[in-house]
Length: 480
Image (tube, rainbow, N blue to C red):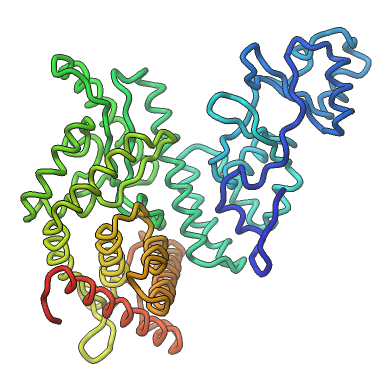
């Protein structure tokens, strides 16, 4: 049943999983059940649909009231099997799939009901069209329809979705969660399409996403930061396994690029062997990075700390996360070295409290990702890793640090407010760039902001500066 918290826009539920909006599962019977018996069961349950199951108990078709009106009355006898009247193949969604995607499927296929199936094909619940669409304003539906298209159309529709959500009063944090969810879903879909074309992999693997996508904070134009954990395999199989993955990952990264996720300039992509390793090789690599603690080793370690699995099977990623936690606990100098490197991240304020000029040429805009978000992200990451936390999102890390007592509640509140404001300013700037026909970026024209907004941004950056300096100094011992 769709519900929303008091004071929140109904469309906020779009940022949640489909399982949060589903009703109870409908009756389900064998596809061989006589139609008369199936309709009687449907009536007894006062349900508007019934599922047909195969011999393994997996849902393979659906019979709705509309199907009965169109196909059954005056045409099919009560003794024919349910399979003769059901709609198949069954269109369904996974429980962790974003509700935005489920609504797009409902509209794309003109469905009244959308079953929610687990990985085994068993029904967990049902999404009903009327209730799902009640959560969405009429204007937003136009944008949601684009989310039922191909991956390129979906990526292109993100700006319209974000603009409509902000207009509905949703916070930038929630909009970014939805944008990130769409980005993550696109990675999964492109991965599935690539697998379909290349066939079964020679060994199981897990796709990792890193950077802003791994933290759940990607905006409208993230480039690629991804890698893979391959299941360990005998050395004698390396030539065969590596040849398959070279071709597969090259295709995968190119498809992401074509869909609107630019190739990473630094090569942090699965097609690069540095970011495509077996579980054992990943453990060895992290050990090397933790020992060297200079140059590229620090940079690579910093990038990989925010990884998360992009597939449902999280076991390999969880095991690697546990190994990383052990290394960090055993070698605290690794975090200290990273803190020293991150100390070069400055906020976008001048000595006299003005906004920094980060724009080449005559402009004077400020890069609020590099000189706003990143110092906060880096400092929060270091403290969370020091305390052995598994969270990757900045907001979640701040909350966890406060709960642990590593930072005060007052400090956490100021940092959460600063994080939200920076996301809001950056997201609105990117939307303005798109509206002006420019590639969305991170340079913000602070001079064009109202006086009150500029002051709020100035205070947010001061909070980030104080927190990041103190955090970095706590690792390095340097006095600011």
